[in-house]
Length: 317
Length: 277
Ligand SMILES: Nc1ncnc2c1ncn2[C@@H]1O[C@H](COP(=O)(O)OP(=O)(O)OP(=O)(O)O)[C@@H](O)[C@H]1O
Ligand SMILES: [Mg+2]
Image (cartoon, rainbow over all chains, first blue to last red; front, top):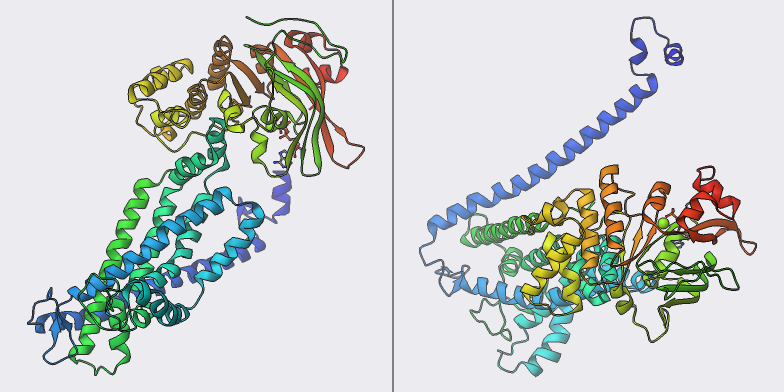
């Protein structure tokens, strides 16, 4: 106490509690840092609302003009007269996304469990960066591979019922699966590796095998991260444009046969967006309509994902 | 039921009738670091044996080698021989999974699974067999009763185990290990994260459990060792002439009353009376 009052050159009563020059400097930098963070948050929020509001007016305008049935089976918004039956885009999107998930989820989760609970330190040190490289392959490269290798080499040979025109939904689905697999593996592995060692030890001490510990304890304890990984991959596949455009083509065929060419919502936007659509033309507004739908579906999945995650979230210290 | 005997073999190791463990020249290393060496001791059946000693002397290391938990640490290696009854614990034909089913472990920090109270207990029986729902119900109740937790949780078996207090969680972990019907329970500082009341309850429980189980406990609490154990092993660390790090060794093993009243080694006396950290 006496030391303190001597250290602060106090004139007034209680002045030894006043901030020192050093603390005032720290406070100054503290306030700068907080304001930078505030601005960052504000910019993010502004961009998001900006995007939403730019999507809305053309979408509403077009919905007012559309006379044909929206859930029709023909999607030809750029033709005359335009047709807005969106079913082919919906089936196209879901066929490709589902095929992709059939690849990404089982293989991605298996890889995550392997990395978190089986791989030795050295194997992990090699495999984890490879996964990250795989996640960084430009989608256009995957698209090329699908178009020139998978479609002619695999699909046309082994999936005979399709309409052989060089494009296929299954090729696009497979490549989208390859694209999203490392996302599932990497995010899920992070979640599983974060499960405390004590959980695993408890399992082993009860006479559980490595597999039982991995699948019945670690997987359960890390379930919220696993769900997050799946949702992230799903959203990524859903919005994937390049691969769908290059490998599945741009023909909006209403079909459930994965050997057929198909168009997804995202690849329609990519396709129509590079063509010249004069502002206020039907084509222009259609892009925004589909964009709104894409946005909405993604939003719903994210909300759903958050709900699932918070339901599963278990707090362990 | 205590297999008391003051017989000593040629090496001066206290011998019991039908001991659960016999450690002969046991040493454990982590990669090229010798953590503890020259351990010779026997652990009697249906009784509580305490391991005491300053931090880093290898108490946990030896404890973990008794149910092959060390197998899970890359680089850890057990030298010498550990017999579990007549069997060599580290026989290449012995299964570590089977060993751990018979020799359970309770850890320093309560570590219930993020599942319900019921599922925590049911996990072990489920992986070790195919019990029916009614068999499981019986096991869960019996285990919780043995761990003196049943009355506190019987109306909330489906609540998350994480909603229990620390002391309750630790008793749940004890109940969980009892549920697979082990012979031995290893406890590594099971009360160090608990308040004195919860600690006293666990100590009572250990005294209760030694009628049916063999217990080995690591503790830094001298009163606890004196209160619950019949035998005590005291370890220290010594500078290893072959390396610059300190290696643990067993100083003395004897009945707890002897260890605390009139130990042979002056270091034991210094430690139990608090003159040596
Ligand atoms: N997984 C490990 N890898 C490498 N060294 C380890 C490992 N676990 C323990 N050790 C080392 O082995 C020695 C003995 O450790 P151990 O945990 O058995 O001590 P302890 O007597 O239980 O100590 P405490 O009372 O602090 O728990 C220490 O030097 C420790 O650093
Ligand atoms: Mg320890």
